[in-house]
Image (cartoon, rainbow, N blue to C red; front, top):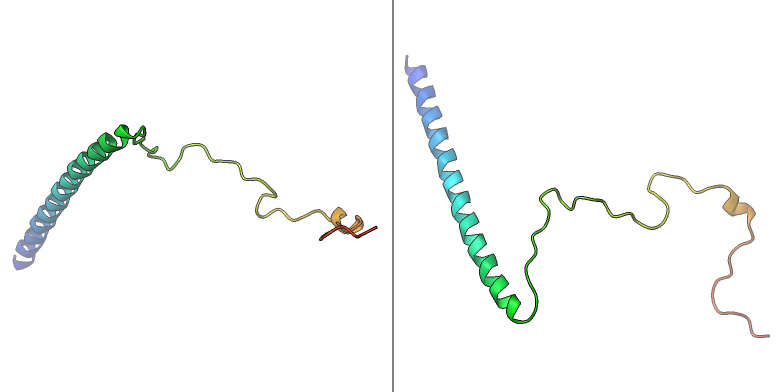
Length: 91
C-alpha cells in the first residue's frame, strides 16, 4: 500500500510541476508579445516593422546554387583543357 501512495504522490507532483511549467510558459509568451509590440512601435517611427517568421522553419526551401551535395562530379571535366587561372600573360 505504501507503494501506491508514493506513486500517487509522484503523479500529483508531476502534474503540479507540469502546470507550473505551462503557467511560466504562458507568462513568458505574454511578456514576449509585449516586448515585440513595444519594439514594433519604436521601429514604426523610423519606417520599419516587425514581421513574424513562419512556424515551420521557413516554409519553402531556397534552392542553392552549384552542385547538389552527394552527387559526384562528372568525369568529363578531366578530359577538358584546364581552366586559365590568374592574371593574363603580357603579349
